[in-house]
Image 1 (cartoon, rainbow, N blue to C red):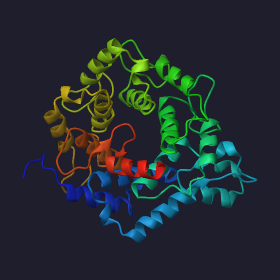
Image 2: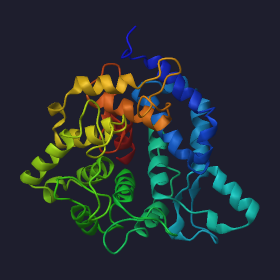
Image 3: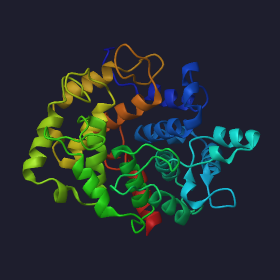
Image 4: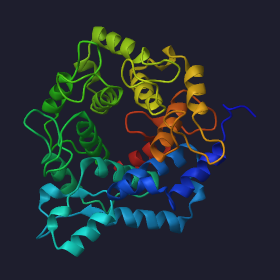
Length: 343
């Protein structure tokens, strides 16, 4: 047995166990449990492991996700509609009597829709009008989107989530697409990549959000001409040491095998990396005993890095992994289901 052996069954068990039990340090994510659920289910789908969950269990998960949906009411204005990150927020509200706790978050709304699609739901119980109006209310004058209406920060992460929600729900009519595209363009830097906001340092995560957003809108070549695409390609390829780093002079991290890998995949440039070195780096950060992947050798596995490690391995054609849609970050199988329910 070598350290780089791929043990998919161990990773399936890791994900399955993560649905029931997490380490104490995960308590800080209690108000965003939906994030963990998203990474677990997408990861299981890549491993072709959703059959580990019974139909009844899947139904329970779907019902839990729908409990997170905020719809218009006397106490919930339209601009707060969408999905929250956890039922913990509901409990806080019910015990305090304070409505301010109940507010959607566009990243949670994106992940909720991805979870439902991955589990085969038809989205018929999603209040699409309210969700879309909630997203529209988050767009700022500069074209960017806030994470949530009250005090939400705004940057390319939430531009991507907002656009992905509209694409999934098949309706871009409520937002100003031209302004969103202009904001993305304004985040482009001299080095060829994108910062989270105009004038900020280029980063692998924000660059993915920019390229994936433009791809979803079919606007990539409208914003980046051949010269800019070549500079971006060079920047992204140069993020590989053995694995990929998020910024120059940083240590590699398994999650960037997806963020950078998906960026290059969307651009049609993934074959220009050293796939074997990337594969070895990712596999060397797997825990062969418990399953799961960590960000580096000094860390413990977590659902996010496990999922994104598998996404990165899937992108480079690793055997026995389902292919993913690099722009939506769900499997091709789930994407095909989405297309069926959109028709």
